[in-house]
Image (cartoon, rainbow, N blue to C red; front, side):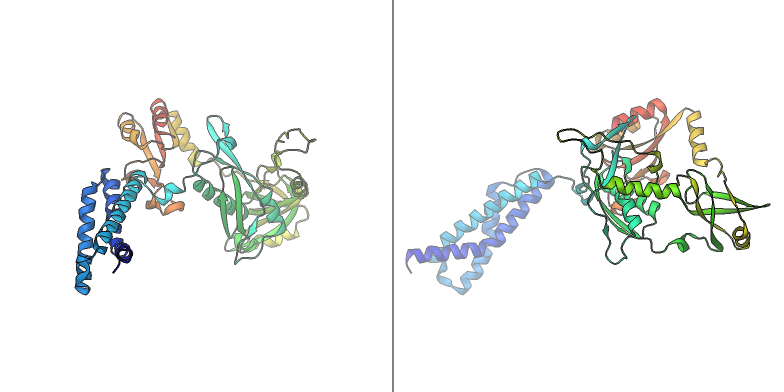
Length: 418
């Protein structure tokens, strides 16, 4: 055969034979550099590639014995070596640039832009608002117009020192609690804008009525701040009936809903001004701070009462509503006792795992609970691990509750907080 044909055949055989040596060389170069930080010598790569290619070339020689005396063999060997060295170089470069600790959780650790963070005391807060339309979730009925309007015009204040994935989880829980949504999915970007996909409640009033109770609606004077779940006493004549509030609605609540519709037509976050001017944000009215609480006034309240109390309430001409106290919260009492003893409890997100062991060993701070950022707690919906269940050492990104003397706790927080 002529020399050009032999060269072309050599290139063909080199490419065909060099695939396996190149793959092995690239993989080995990546593994050695990633786990040891050492670059595999080029001479070792050449020997390895020739060894693997010789096995393939030996099998090829059984098919065509004259291949060893032809120029195509030299061309094929050169192609194999170039492929192996190139693959090794790329694998070594990838092993040097790839982070040593990579997880799907760390990929989601996106944080908010500093432009949207507000300082409240010594804590950062962010106000999350919906962007675009509130979309309906597939497989569920569409949202009612009132619920759609309420979510679209709403805003939620959340901590700014947690990842966006955790902000999304907390906003989803808030929406489920406030609006009894059957399902909701939230995506928040770096500018604190939320894209919300929601499904309406799977059932209405019947889902909130406890077993063995009956729902009764009465027209009465509604106290300001009355919300679902409050315990009330309804005085009908000489009789007093205890019940739990399921819903409360007044004329002022209706006007508040209409005002929200009117505000939606304007630019969010300020009032219209002439061209070239700047908008000044308007303070939110106190009535809009909680979508679940009633403004108060004359209206209707639906309460869950015992079966025997239904008839007296329906026969009463002017029932009066009295809100009962739930008593002192045991949680607040516990915090008060801790503070009285000179101790404090802080919640902090660890920013530097290298200083954790040294800081813990040099302080009197006790770690009460930890919430991992890894796969130990099932990804996004992870939970808290308390007390003696904390086995693995604290790492960057973990969220912890710590307790101890005030000075030692503040020093601990400053040493490891991010």
